[in-house]
Length: 166
Image (cartoon, rainbow, N blue to C red; front, side, top):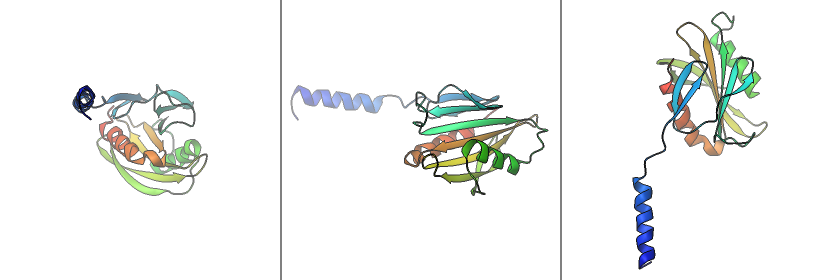
């Protein structure tokens, strides 16, 4: 390609290369704040004391690539962390079984969580973790993402878990 078209192509390439990376998106659920590398929707109720956000922010039901459901539990809920993981996995994710043990840094501490493969309503992957707040209350974070978005979702889950603060 020669002439003015080549200059336009070079200019467009340089502009794309020098453009700033996508800005980190703030996220706040049940008093916990994090920074996500992708934009999420505004929180919507997902049940009693549960909120849900999705990416892309404008995704229609079933069209999201990544979702995060956060369920809040008081410190006197009567459930242990493994019981909370079971409850959220079955109630909000429709997952059953023990899943695969995984660990993440959540609120500056190592948190044991679970990873699942789901087939219904469509193939997806999920991770569930418990975040224990300073006052003892718990927020269970349940991430669900499509297998085709796994690499990006892994980066988003890691960034959210590592940046989580009260």
